[in-house]
Length: 167
Image 1 (cartoon, rainbow, N blue to C red):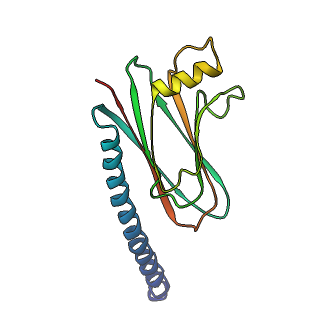
Image 2 (cartoon, one colour):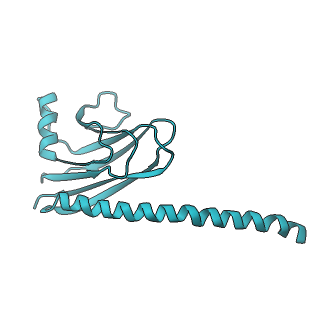
Image 3 (cartoon, helix red, strand yellow):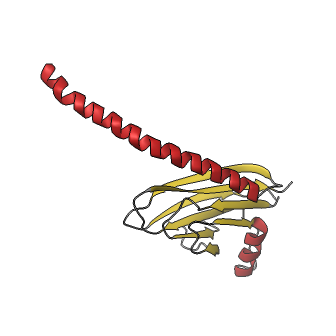
């Protein structure tokens, strides 16, 4: 039992220390993301806040894609704000009418070199662009936002999306 304790204690102590050290970084990132969320809410001021989606990733040696879906089924005007200020890796934000599995999906809007910036758009803009590409299309019922993230420093980063409805 004493032999087991000699080996187990340093291992457990190391794991606890790693958890505390990495947890501190996560707490700092969480605080920054919370600040960016408030900043995004200010960008869509005058709307009724509907929700937010925080996307975390570790920018490593390879490119990656993160996708989220937002339902826009109400007839009201939706306003969106994205903060990529906590993103240092190359970032392209693409907005589609369908998920990646759908080979016939349509690219509605694209923001290149979005890292370190704030972006703002609305369903009116998206619907106008969509109808311009597909004239007989109905309005969008949902949108699929795709974050194409380039390689980076190996640090944990995040992107904030906030959306609201015009009253």
